[in-house]
Amino acid sequence: MQPHDFWQDVHPAGSFDRAGPFSGFFPATLDDGRQIRLPIRPLADGEHALASLIINQASFDVQDALAADLAPKLAAFRPEVIVGLPTLGLTLAAAVARALGYTRYVPLGTSRKFWYDESLSVPLSSITTPEQQKRLYIDPRMLPLVQGKRVALIDDVISSGTSIVSGLTLMTSLGIEPVVIGAAMLQSERWHDRLDAFGPEWRPRVAGVFRTPMLKKAGEGSWTA
Image (cartoon, rainbow, N blue to C red; front, side, top):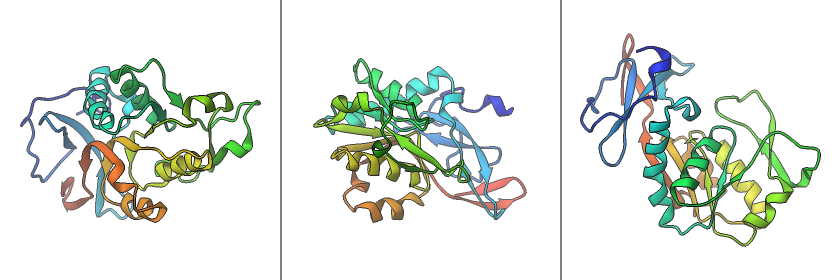
């Protein structure tokens, strides 16, 4: 596969072996059995790797499939508004809001506009850009859309848990307790401890399209779950 070929197709159920070992790609599997090929990214130790999803590089068919799977899982929690985490979570949040029949969603951001209030922000870091120290903001004009509402907080991937905890911290500072957290991919279980430390009530509120494991090296270019 070429690097630009990943995330472009939703394959029929059973297209790829789910048992491994895996070479070149990991077959993420939706609840209905359909599969999406994800690239495997080796970690710094050389002995472990993770499947990767960059949702804004995915085809519209893949984005729509992810949103269609996640939307009913969130609907069970009866959210009234969708809030998206930057940057990649915004792509999924918009698609899910449309799938649920909403006319808009609330995007959080990392770019401070001149009318923003610094008190309506929290520090933000990401597993993919750990060296960048940013802040997570909500536009003050968006506050009436979320205050007193049942909020679904959406990110593209939950991996280390840092981004989703930042989102929860910001919501908490606004007096908002999201009813559900949504993501396309729940990447390994590394995020469990960080989310549990924020509050034991949160993990049962997490809904994902699919889960991917921490992979272990099985040979040159080969990985197992």
